[in-house]
Amino acid sequence: MIDLSVKNLVKSFDADDNILDGLSFDIQAGERVGIMGRNGAGKTTLFRILTGEIGYDSGEVVFAPGKKVGLISQIPCYPQDYTVEMVLRTAFAPLEKLKAQLTELEAQMGQQPDRETMQRYDLLMDRFTTGGGYETEVDFQKVVNGLNIPSAMQGRLFSMLSGGEKTRVNLARLLLEKTDILLLDEPTNHLDMKSVEWLEEYILRFKGTVLTISHDRYFLDRIVQRIVELRGGKAEFYTGNYSAYVVEKQARFDLQLKQYEQEQAKLKQLGYTVERMKGWGINNRSLYRRAMSIQHRMERIEKTERPVAEKELRLRFTEKDFFGDEVFTIHDLGKSFTDRPLFDHVELLVKGGERIALLGDNGTGKSTFLKILLGELTPDHGKIRFGPTVKTAYLPQIIHFDHPERTLYDTMLYEKNLTPQAARDRLGAFLFQGEDVFKTVSTLSGGEQSRLRLCMLMDEKINLLILDEPTNHLDIASREWIEAAVEDYEGTLLFVSHDRYFVDRFATRIWVIEDGAIRDYPCGYEKYRSILAHEAAQAKPAPERVEKKEKKEKKEKPRGGDKALEKKLRSVERDVAAQEAIVADLDGQIAASAADYQALTRLLEEKAQAEAQLEALMEQWETLSLQLEGEG
Image 1: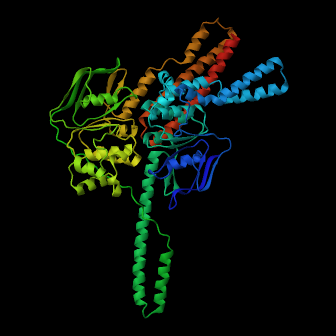
Image 2 (image 1 turned 90 degrees about the vertical axis):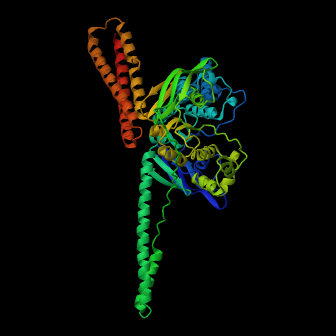
Image 3 (image 1 turned 90 degrees about the horizontal axis):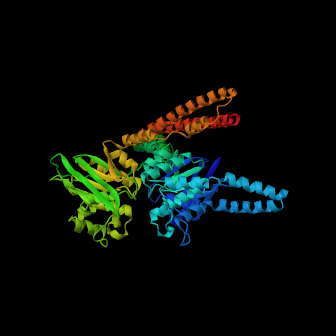
């Protein structure tokens, strides 16, 4: 069944240029689809059209009847006195309305029950139950816990939240609304890693249809089953997740380039033949006619366009020689804010060439730690000792320029002391070209400011590079350019990032700020995830079925006829335990294979089957338990 059909969609904001130019695609019910394309390709425009926020010039957009569509980038306006909890509970407004109607009908039936009233009551009760009316509180707690919206935040005024917090609350509200078709526009922005992982699990269990725009490649690898890429206003289709898309896209490029080159060689040879035959045909009309026939055939040949490769930037940090073993040593470091300890008694040693990812939930003190390291903040106690030849460069999360009124060109001239040509060349290497170089710094987007700051860092001789969320606000192409620069850098790297693709690629050591301490994991990201999975499995509480068994054992000893039932119950309990172990083992394998899309796809399918078997066993266990209690 098709949930969404888009046919020959055309949209233009400029009379001479269609941003969508005959776009067509179908989305099947239950599919999870990634919408890809460079900035300006029309991804957000498409989503705004799908939600009815803007119109389109021609074509058609058809949703399956009765399907509810939700887009998280649209944040509704609420009264000024609405708290976060009130905003979240607007998701239950239709259910609350049904509940009020049911209460009214109950009162009527108590006074004068009649057939029509009872039939209407049954109908509304059906809608209330199937709509999740009895699960609202459970759903509410699951979502607010998963997206890290604690009670204190729920009590705050929604109007006083930051843009990122509003986005997170709006995402939670949308998930609580039980939408049939989710349109997710950069859903992982403003979420910490735990919240992103929770969202991934939610989407994987979600029964509806999902379309997502995202620059989070790890998220795309886990979530999407198919890619629709917007290119030149039309759609190109790729089966599989992001990693499969990258491989297939390169294969298509290589094939098209080969076809183009073969075609050009053939045309060149035919052209040479035509010219010779024309020369020979001066005195031979038959040869001349053959030459013209070949020329007409050449004109009728369908020409393959020469594929254009994405512009690759080979950026490189200028490195300063490092002498010695220790880059820096931290002894007994501690810092608190308003009597809340961020971290205390920290002891760490960093050696040359290490690549360290500093992780932790939002608000745990990652940026504070970096500021202490850079000397911008003073710790409550403890000290940091740097090696004598350490030279540091820092790319902050929030970029600041001393003279934002200057143009990009003047910024490079005055702050980096470059010649005019060198300034243009450096800016051009970072895709600031043509008239872009005369923009003022203050008019740049967050991503463009990060790119400019990185451009300015490139010629500084450094051996310790510190990055605070370096890929925030950047599209995938820009992230890959930064990764290319970091890949070539051979000095010591310390970075904070929620971009798991970036962390997985570069980290050889993980620091995690949690519970007032910094835990040190001398390994990469995948190993770190497998360690966490193992720790979670070890700390897993005894399943509820054991408690039920103990409760059952406190009852009077059942009669002899129940022994067969008890034996069957114990057998099912063993099967449940074995199946739980299988699911836990698959969780570990999934964590270890997150970068391998083929293995991940297979493991996710196995896990879905294993969980279905576990659910069936648990239902069997509950049925047997109820039978035993009834007969006992």
